[in-house]
Image (cartoon, rainbow, N blue to C red; front, side, top):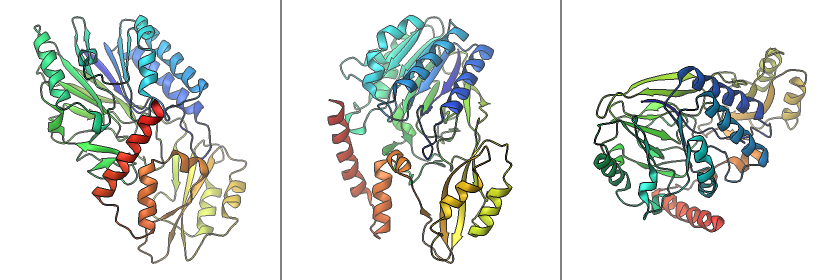
Length: 387
């Protein structure tokens, strides 16, 4: 069984008020090309299809058109799409029936009384256990192993078994995620890989944006990462993962297919910080014909000049690049970088990250108890909003 594993598309994401539809469309067209070239048996999209639970009609149309194009590129392929923590599980479940006509399975939630709905058999090829994002408080105990046991009972022909999940696994490289720890990333508490059970041949993960194998997963557990960067700190290659499985219990053959970023996110300078005058010079020297988003790292004694942002906008006015933000660092100060945020960026931040930032500014330790209380409050609000 040949598998294309991807996740965290974050369609509808904007960067400092800039619309990113063009580069998201370029990424989707690249997906179509890869499917046409590789002819996988299974296409896995492991959560965070959208950046918000309520994407615009235009963004939803872009996604549905992309799914049809991906299907047409390889009509025999099965597609499995699970909800992530940024998605509305209900939206995924509503369209579950009509999508079946195109061999697309959309999984938005877990019904503890109907967990076999999460098991998808691909005739003659293998089994998929499709687990969407589930809040830790609502995760049925032992769900992963129970599902794996059910598949083991069905799998008389020793076919490959693939499982998906959208969550944090401790010990990963969380580069690009602010305030990430081994305890939680993006408001999702972490699991140990052992908690995911045993009996799968490949565990396809979503949520962490840096593509990587999970330590302790014996080269069977992998995050595909996001195919295009969502923040400036995701300064690493972006890709999707191709997996080949011959039979149950055999080691998977895995390779990356890099996705070129249509409009890269560039930080000037690439390392450290410089004076405001030097930063302006770097921006001025940036090629006029290169499409990119630009962040400046500036070192200051006190504060940036009040007109700094207007100056930067003026310098880049006739360039193809898009100036976004100035991060400042005070000279000879151990204090973390101050971050000037737009209203749009503030809205796109995870609530727990804003709370931790506020606590840090006040000199208060945001310990595990505070983290748990805050997460419980978020969970209650989230459940109420979906009713």
